[in-house]
Length: 504
Image 1 (cartoon, rainbow, N blue to C red):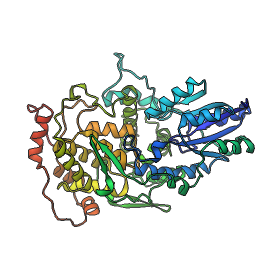
Image 2: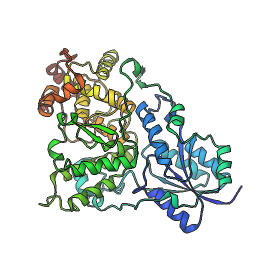
Image 3: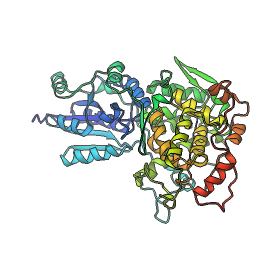
């Protein structure tokens, strides 16, 4: 074994130089300790194979193929390897005394691979990143939080003051010598750092597995057009800077649920963004920016640290946006302490207790929902939006989740799986939290919410612009389940017939 030391930065979902704790520390230690540096991304089988057993959707594969080469160009040497993360690093460790620098990830496989590496005595430095606040935050009673508002109050100041690492400079590092790089390329399965090379090794299948059903989405919807999405840190920062400059954040609290405003296009460079929402969820999901960076940009823009929530100088829009960033923290926090949430309800009283509709009926309703042919115009518009673009407005996500689970009686896990396959801004924990919230089985104190799709359309798309944008002049379709019937069925399904919630 070559005993030469090597600092290895293992990139996962952190395609940025600004506020990247693992990268910044790896470069700093490489310089101070005079140890060669190398950066690595491993294209795992689940990312490439479209295996419905572990959903890494078409949109995710496409984004990865576009974003990874741009990020790799920031480095003198950046290896893209096909294989498994732990096994790839173990192979490298046979030739070098490796210390791995990596940002903590939300995927369960991350912790399994870390355990495997440590079992082989590989030195690993894991950096807190995807979760900004202390994962062990507890209430005065010593319990983990299960309701958002008290959680937000508890972590507010910590989130606002969390450190933002300086911009890393990968070009300043002393990289592994050329012979070393050449040798590694001989023993590893290297993929060239081009979008074409990565996309060529990706399956183009669009398959999901729901219960006992395997569904080829090609039979239901066209391939989404994803070419307009931004895929770099530079573009993400430019887009959010424009969002601030145009004062769109100032009124965020007033228009965040407006679907009609989401039809007005914004052009940023060569990118056209549909709607006046920030679309920054894509950057957060893939680590093009950190939530800490966004928070710091907001604080600088408004000249306010927002430590006093009720401060007269604070922007209500900014406060609302910061609150939404903390929602993302909340869902990650919940998942870290309940790692089976992808498969079971957060609320124990609903586990195995909700009487979802019979399988064949569920399959028909589910596929009709995917195609945007439910007869609820606002739902169909939203489903067309996500099918065509890989993205859906947050208000729409709440509406379609409520209708699928409450009106149609389809298990929330089915909807979660479809979103995993289609969303370009997929954040596993936010997606799961959103679906459990929509199904009223998650971390939510209210007994049940039933969205009235017609009322939602009137409240959030009064002009009908959103419907026209995504449905065109389509004739009305009879709903596959009338809302008044569905509402009573939902109460029965949840065992809440005595409860009389108002429609939303």
